[in-house]
Every structure is written in structure tokens, then in C-alpha cells.
Image (cartoon, rainbow, N blue to C red; front, side):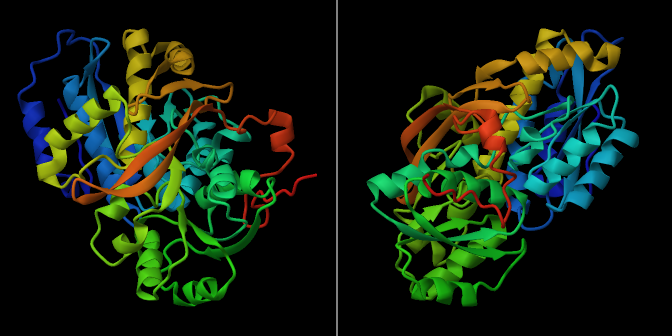
Length: 426
């Protein structure tokens, strides 16, 4: 097998990949050219830790099938971005135009996903399958026929959370602190559309991606009458906010966006871990899910990566990349590795894929090639001597419009800082 690595690949322990590759036998059907799969994730910038974990599960799953599917070898070619749309687009162009990949798996962040969706429209005979990016409009508005997303989006990830906060926690006013870009817009929209329609009131605090000083925002929120804080940050931004909130002695109940309640946060050392115990969240995964498929996946991940930089359980980005990879591999099996005729049969097989995600949740695609799947309600608890995200509820088969008729949902407009989804009951 030929494996090409970028300047950042050394962060991921890729020596294990090379060693595994060296031991594989030659492909049985040598005359069939390898399938060139390009990977794109963030190994730079605020989400670098999540990007590293994404490549762990991709490597783990490709090793599991000996880099062979449909009678063809897979060459996995890695690239790195920094969560910025222009950089992701440049790296995607490199994968297509210089590395000549057949399929791209990626990207990780929301604005990157929209950029690659638009780029995919210009391509013939190539396919882009999402990695973990969760901006709603990537597939909901102006979808591209050769962009597929087997992970649910940021709006879907909040299904059930606004209702839980209002009805079960009896909280009527919240302060939302969120990143000022596409993915947090989707998450805030998903929370607000439930919480506000029940009568909840929301005050929003926005911060650009890459913010390091939240002290003024923390002070303002602590002085407010908000009954809880909804935190929709991730990566180093989330860590900065939580650290400064803990240092300021914050005591309000915490509600988390999906990438806050994740091992990329819980595994980091610092005072933030103290205030995260009891934090409620929602999303497509949890550390503890009562499902045998999930337990088996976590055990394989631990065996492969716990001694090579992995987390106690895989992160949300790792699971999303694995889920999208499973969609690719299932479609390649269905067409016996055939990518001819501008990948027409392969793309039809992608659209028809139905399978169980690593969490055990059923996955299928809608008419926009967007995942419909389960969303978990979670709580951070101390278990086995460490903080873990524990699922205590599940909303089954959440679609991209949260059960609202599509035309009615689209009429609400695109999620943004000026349109955060806080629609009052009529």
C-alpha cells in the first residue's frame, strides 16, 4: 500500500499505519487501480485535538479491513486544515488536483463544510463525503448532488435539549455564549427553536472563533439573572471559556453544546473539569451508551489508541468521521469498488446506504443526502474515577428540520447571529 502523509501527520502516531501497511499482502486483483481516498481534517487551529482523534478512528477502521474494499486497495492520503473555510478549500483542491483522489472524507468544521459543498458542485466524477462538520445549511439549502453527510448536523444535535431545560429543569431564562460562525449558529438555533417556543427567554453572547479572553463576558453573565448558561464553544475556545468561568467562581447550572461535552474537553487538565460535573448536553454520542455496538467500538478504540495518545473513549469528531467512512465503505462494497461512469453507481449506492453508526443508532439519508439518526440527552458524571458523558435519554430518528415540515422550517431562515431561532409561541 502507498500512504502519503502531510507535514502534520506525525502528530497522529502514523508509524503504526506504516507498520500495518508493510505487513499486508498484495491485492488479489492487481490489475484494478487502488481507490484513492483523501482525508481532510483540522490538525491546526482550535480543533486540532479533535482532528487528530478523527484520523485515529479512520486509520483504525481502514486497518480493520486491511485497506481493501470491493476487491480494490485503498490509498489513504491525509491533508490538514485549520477550521478556516479558505484553507480547507485550498487543501481540498490539492487533494483533487494534485493527489488525484477519487473521494474526499472531510472536513471537520461548519464553515469548511459549506465551502466544500460549494466546491463539490464544480467536480465531475469525484465525491465529497463529510467528516464531522455540522452547519445546517451545508445540506439543507442548495445541496450539492455529490456531497453526502452521514452524520447529523448541529441543529439536529440539540434535539430534545431545549425542552428538557424548560420542562424538566424548570429554567425559564438562559444566557447563551457561542462562537460567531456557522456551526454554533446551527446549535443555538436547534436549542432555541424548542426552548423559546415553550416560553423560554434567551440572551446571546457571541465570540469569534479563536477567542482566548472571555473574562468580560463571564463577568457579565455571572451578574445576569440567567438561570443557566448554554455554552456552544469547542476546542481551545471552549476550554478558555470554561477555565475562566471556573476561576471566576461561576455557579450557574451549565448546559452544553455537543462539542463541549466531549473527551476533548474532559481529558484536558484544569479547573474547568470541576464545574463540568452535572452539566447537561445533547448530541450524537456519549461516553456511556447502553448499546453493545457502542461498547464494542469503544473497546476497539481503546485497544488501538489508549497507549498512543487516544482518549478513554472516542471523541465526537472521531465517531462522526468513522460513521461517514462506514457510509463510503458500504457503498463501495455495494458496487464492488466500481467508480466508473463518473461514479454514478457509487453515488446511487451512497444515497441508499442504511446502517448502524458506531453508537448503535440507525443511519439513513434524506433527499438532500443528509443523515437522519438518533440524538442522545447526556449528563457529565463521575464514573470509575473520571468524568464521563452518560446518556440518559434518546430522541429517535431526528431529521434535519426537527420534525417540522421542510417548507415551514426553511421559512424560518438560515441560522445566524441575527437569526438564532428564538421564535415565540404564536
